[in-house]
Image 1 (cartoon, rainbow, N blue to C red):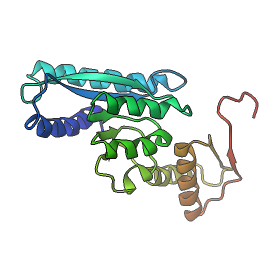
Image 2: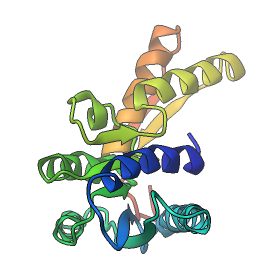
Image 3: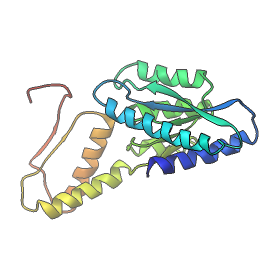
Length: 205
């Protein structure tokens, strides 16, 4: 799903809210890695949302109300990641595009659901993001179990008879995708010669 489609979903929710509550601005949160090794993805989030909002505002906003952006940095593997979620809630933001990582998205979704915050994640692929039936959780990408099947099919077709290793980085998303790929690969008749985990950031494996 494209950023345009994500914003269409968010706009529909915004219109429903704007019809009931009058505010000077409707604030849309953007939560992603704005620093660190995955900052390029966070920048894509920010630029995509800001560009869409500029176009929406140029066409009159949502029921006459302008949209604005509040950007939060998702510090993966850091306790501050969920503190950022608390800041979003405290700031009165009710609509969020994010998060990037499944490991942050899953606990964040509980906080959002409890506090009336609707969110769409463009990249968190773990099935648990949406399988728990939380009203506020939406996903704009394929799940691990879907991507794993596609990856396994590609390897089985393109690398038949070759030695295959499956490696993950111990993250929620990495392990989930690797496990699903291995499951589908084995079901298709393949057998990996190596199934290993690595520690991100190490220079000697």
